Length: 98
Length: 178
Image 1: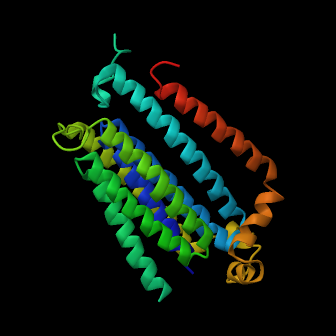
Image 2: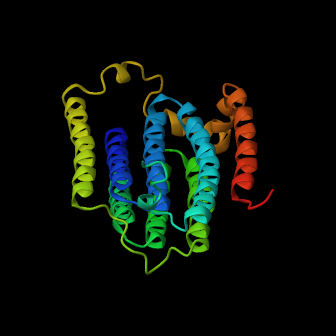
């Protein structure tokens, strides 16, 4: 059975995504790392669906719908911030710093 | 055969994910993320989720990543960017957190190897191979549609409201003047 290796790969991809969020400063790349983490979670849902029934695949379906909505709204926010600041680098977004 | 394909696809997905995180150009990052998603779609096929694999390629690798590339090119973030990696302290913190997660994974893997999946194995409602039998019975889409439109009908309808709100929100945010 591939359950153990699939869960391991899922955890590895999630760790890479977390590392990417902490490593990068470009807002769009950080957003892509979040998508990577969502994909890792989807993989563990599908691996467990093989043992526990097709409901896990339904949840993946919902996760994808929410991810699509999140990508649309998030990229619109990044566009609005870029129009304001001329940058998507998180270092330049320091309006709240005293 | 299935195991060999799984490990090949897993290595591909992991390598592409690492490259996605470490490439300097956002365009290169996005393209490596597409490679990761294709690898994951192949793994989904091996795990008896053919419909989800198709959706993964259509929605994730197709729609969402095209949206990302559109925004990257709209904002002209291709070559000639100053590097956006954090300094050495930030890299250390990122490595620490990533490695911490991996250590937790290793601990879980050791427990699993020692004791099996424990309570999870006791709760298995499906014998091995049952999912592919259900697929042969009801069809790949039918197996997914039955719980989606019976057990999860209300969440499905709420998802449509969420998508409508996201469409309106994206237009409101991205438009200069409403």
